[in-house]
Amino acid sequence: MTMITRIGFCKKCFSEKRPKSQENFIVFGATSNSYKGMIAKRNGRRGFTPHLYEYDRLIKGIVYFKKLCCMDKCGTYLTKDKDNVYIYTNDELWTDEYTTLANWNALVLFKNTGFEI
Image 1: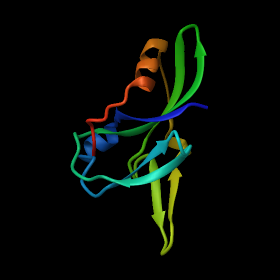
Image 2: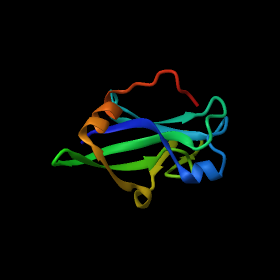
Image 3: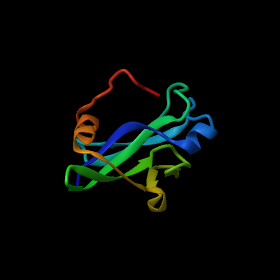
Image 4: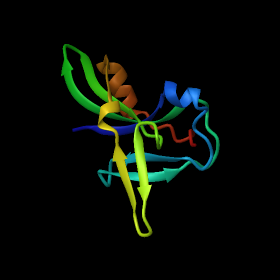
């Protein structure tokens, strides 16, 4: 399984004027191979939020993948108790998508270190 976190556009977050400072979101750490909860440090560009991209299959040069918005109360949910933070993804909200192999490789290899929320 290949899973990455990259910025993507979310219609729901656009209509709710996200991302906003102090909102929760998750990222997937390739090194740790696990989710990590984060807090937005500032208001971001409306509708452009972290997304999980999960590779599914390659057929005749087309990559099929699943995509999920990482913002809390959109595609993911973070809950807390006095000791821990629990991270959940909403399995019903993953969308099936596809792109060319060249575009997928560009997405995987692109590391936009200048974009932060």
